Length: 339
Ligand SMILES: Nc1ncnc2[nH]cnc12
Ligand SMILES: [Zn+2]
Image 1 (cartoon, protein in one colour):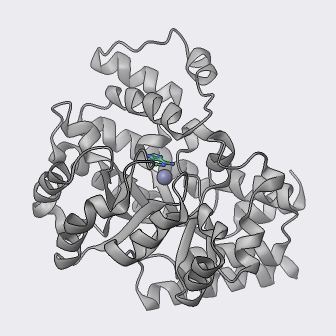
Image 2 (cartoon, rainbow, N blue to C red):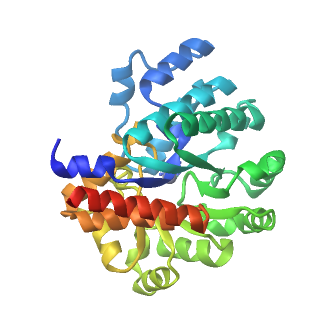
């Protein structure tokens, strides 16, 4: 392990873009398939990993929704969550805002309550075990219609005090943010914060729609915003947080190589960029791997890495006192490391 690797692993950070279903490692997939007597179309863990080769977002989504079929019981969601939190804590994550896709499960007859109860008990265990705090982001699947999203928001009603935000994920092209303007307004009226995937594969106009028609508080990915200098300047001016996912971008061919990743261009443009893992079981790395890959590919220095970690707290949905506490701990870590 190099000095920089060690520095990255110990750097206190928040993870703001993580799909819990995307943290399902092949080993756990097999264990849950066996526990629940579900057949999966793979003979071995190696065969599963070999199938993880994607040339665009939809290739990944097809296999990701298939993988989620092994998740059946509250205990499954609990085990999925604790496996992620254990791994994240080892990477210096002290706070995580995790997304879940209820429609992937309710469409298979698994109740919303089963899913969220398992995730919440996993979150409680992570806090007890690691002191790692977490919040939940309920994502609507954008390939489905707005009516289905409204039904999901309705199912969430008894749990609204345990949900920080709603988000928008799944296939972006052909499913613009405008399709979900009313359900986002309803979520806002119920006191939820708003995030959306935009500008991952979709054009800058989808990012503009996410700002103007959804009123998002945070932008997931946002890479293609850089194609539009006026939009880039607007995002910088408004202090919008971008939850960028370097290894995801590489695996889904959003960038040609890590050497071509725009993470440093984002920072230089004044954007509040953060680094996250998206779907770590599918994209070959957890959050520290993403920091390391971005640092190696783009020659990021310690100041850049600290800026990214700082942005992760500033862009979180923690309150001001909590953010200040995390920033003080981050400063202490950097000073201690320099000493
Ligand atoms: N990177 C991604 N983009 C859109 N939807 C997703 N669901 C899980 N990961 C996703
Ligand atoms: Zn994502």
